[in-house]
Amino acid sequence: MQLTPDQFKQIADLLPRQRGNVCLDNLQVINAILYVAANGCKWRALPERYGNWHTVYMRMMRWSKAGVLDRVFERLQRQRLMRVRIEAVCLDSSIMKVHPDGTGAPKKTVPKRLDAAAAVGAPNFIWLPRMSATSYSGA
Image (cartoon, rainbow, N blue to C red; front, side):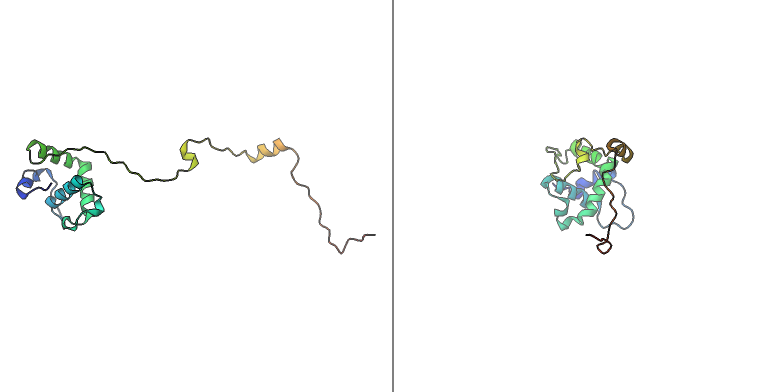
């Protein structure tokens, strides 16, 4: 799934104007996005001929949030330049341990210090003065 320069001219008006010092033109970015979509690869596995994967990814994210990609794919479909169909949903299989408070488990409550002292009553220790061995005069 690659767009030719002639096909790209039909959708070029939908893409934002490139400003500043850009290393990838919009045709390269569109072809890189189509490559990832067609092959289902990770962005980091994008071949070097498409440019830096992070540059392509960031531009794709900006276009996606702005609705540019929706308009581009709609025109590609309408003009029958390319058949774009989404058939799969990707799920991330990352595993992370969750803190017990985050799982909905009942939270442990620590009694307040004043409540605990009143409930117990007498202190839990006995104070005994220390006696040194020299001062003891035993029989």
